Length: 165
Image 1 (cartoon, helix red, strand yellow):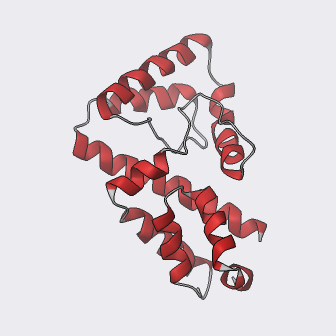
Image 2 (cartoon, helix red, strand yellow):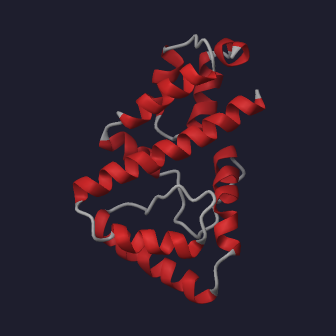
């Protein structure tokens, strides 16, 4: 935690943007330093992600590719996204991939943003099932789910940042 707490605010904010592309989330974490330990930091990050405004959630979503699509670029966030989706991509057949493209399109038409799911450890078939189920949600229910999925992804990535320091 010493290294995390000692990082210059600007550098830490950049590290945190790779976890969640909502600057307000990173700013809140930076502002609450120093943290006694990893658990305190993760708790603060969890609370900050859970209380994001919807515009902040949409900003965070803007950095996520569609499920099944390869994240472009060489950024840390793009690399993490590719790794998080890799196992799912390897488990998909052509039929499932085609169905996933279709459900992504339906989801975006219905909700106006990409379908987001914590993909680590899930197959594309599992993701497809969840995506189809979530198409039946109302806007309020889906927003809560999206916020939670974004939170889980951000915390996983924050763990990676901490492990790398």
